[in-house]
Image 1 (spheres, rainbow, N blue to C red):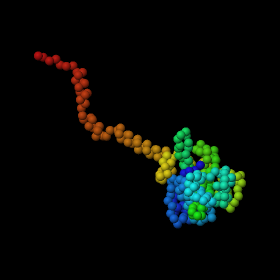
Image 2: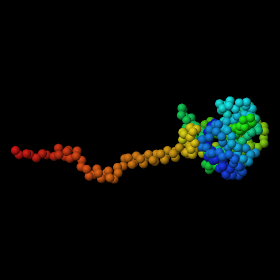
Image 3: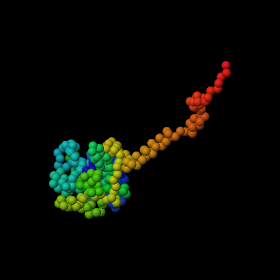
Image 4: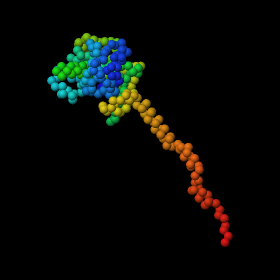
Length: 279
């Protein structure tokens, strides 16, 4: 699944990032900040090829036919399973007519180990944008645009982390062109091919990050950094502190050398033979 991701560029910075893929896109008039901790119900960028301006939508798809938007707040529609896109009423029309991609810097996934969960971050090694296959919808009476991210079975190289992962599409590939093309009816075989999950170890990487990413209120750049780099800095600081505590200062050594040791003098006197006294 994909329930949290990072978008390290503001709406004003994104057009330049799209340009790395020879894609010409404009920023919206309204400014949107970057976020290192995008969560469901947050608003983030969505790319549709028919637009020349980036569209910002709310994460968690609300179908256009809903009578009450509030009813969908409790539904987990931030992900859509690739294998159910055509069989589900919730997804079929969007799959046929309202396809998009979601630009991200990387996504977070939690590895389960017994009762504990450890967060990891999947991103590109070259820091370029990643694009996730998605779908969107529009509720006209509420003027509400929403989107969902499509997930599939994780490939062998990433199954150790989670059994599922978001579908990553590479600009210029057949999968990219087909997903964002005009096709309005899909067979399951076609979807399986176009939305095949990939983890290219030459261009992508995965590493452990801070547990703080689990707190939606925290939105800082360090969330995307490898945890071992953070720990290394802390350990270095701690070791220096310990060395300072254990190593006496020069002036302390001098004081100790100048002061006689009364205990040692008493012991010497006790062991020395006493002189006889004459009465």
